[in-house]
Image (cartoon, rainbow, N blue to C red):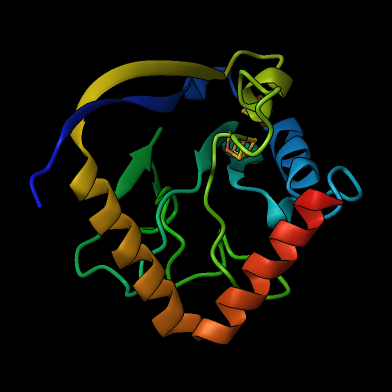
Length: 183
Ligand code: SF4
Ligand code: SF4
């Protein structure tokens, strides 16, 4: 199949680490927005953005979740900030088997930032709106893309999830999500 070039909008959140004060407002609103029903609860463990906190050193680093990784990676990053070494996985965005971060606490399913796209009324991600310190800045840019590639990526992502959690569990979650959106 011949791939077709299209434009797509890349959405990013610029993180200005120096401005973050670790207030956790971003975690609270993200978890509330993604609760079922919406805003019925808030639990930072369900948030797609987490703030790595080190109050003694006055260091706070917001990290929002990225792709699901089926396996731990072979190479890792090392971070030293103001002379302090951080865990090799501390600032990684992946939902990965090596740690509990970015996993739904009850089901263990991976959590991925969706830029709050499930609500078309939200023109700007909620964590950005709630960060009064301007530590999170929403940005968009246009990029050329190939439609065929996007479909391939979707298939690979779904296959990984089905292999890890089993197709019936994935189908159950999708069914529950579609029911909650209709109600
Ligand atoms: S809301 Fe802003 S200042 Fe507060 S923890 Fe999140 S990123 Fe940091
Ligand atoms: S953009 Fe939306 S889904 Fe992503 S971390 Fe922020 S509040 Fe959560």
